Amino acid sequence: MKNKKNLITKEQLQNCIDKKMTLKKIAECNNCPIYIIRNIAKKYGIKFLGSSFFNKGKNNPSKRPDVRKQISNTVSKRWVEGNYDKRINGMTNVLGEKHPNWNKEKHEPLHLAENKYVSFLSKYQDVKKCVRCKSTTNKMNVHHIDEDHSNFLPSNLEPLCVACHTAFHYKYQKQPFITVGKIMTFASAHRLPAHKGLCNRWHGHEWEIEVKVEKRIDKKTGMVVDFSILKKAMQQSIIDVLDHSVLNDFIKNPTAENIAVWCWERLMFDSLLKGISAVIIRETKGSVVYLTKKQMLSIFSENIESYILRGKRKQKDDNPSD
View 1 (tube, helix red, strand yellow):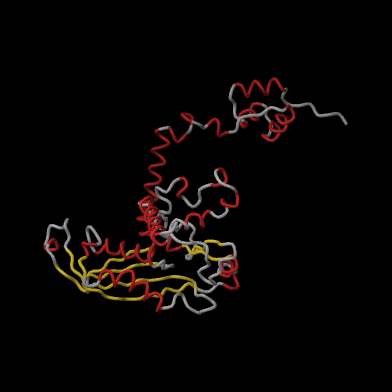
View 2 (cartoon, one colour):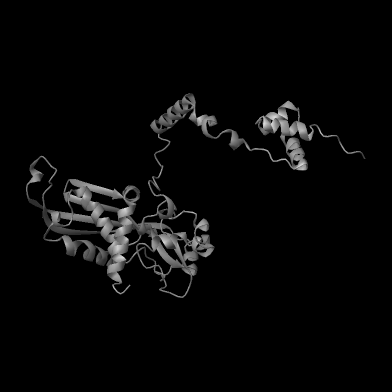
């Protein structure tokens, strides 16, 4: 059987490539499918430029004013229609090595690259012990408590050995998510330096703080978290510090909003409380601030540098001999 004659010669193909014609354009000019041109180029050992080459720089359609305007109008329309309501502002301003999804294979050995979340969480706490079985001999993983990998709050990450981590992900072992909470009170005084009303004067409140924790039920204990553990974390990190105190000594501008953020930070870094889903502050019976994990993630992302420094200082204080 005779070999089929090529539809295009090596010189003709090379000439087309020199003219920076796309693969699609070459196929159209020769009235044949793209895969034929691809096979001929492979036979001749000719490398052709991919379509991405022709869309670089000024040739990129998104650089054209009419295309940019169309994209802007489409995004604005979808935003108004509510298409982005469930969007999670996951990694705002978190770039390079600070991002837990940073590709470390180019910079570190593979065994370290595989433990990207372990490396990230180690900036804030000891990751050498499994928080469930207390083992220190097994390889450690980092478990996303709400199983949302865009939520990289330290309060959503906990070190688990492989066996304990697997127990949370086997379908037949999965338990339902449940939210538990604890309400405590403390009395303290404050003034709001930026406020133009009466709150600029010294005054006091009987504050109420509610902390909610959401996790899957632990099959071994039947609990999300022991109420006594939650109470101890709140007592040591918040109540013992703020009760009968002046809030301005701890928070520069102690609004109820800033107090809620401060309380989340204390629970997350000092008590290492995991699975926090909300911190609720009631200044009076009818005045409430509700801080969610989505909102806290946005705050954490925008201030990642200061949070990393805070984590390093805490580890240094916890291990003065290092």
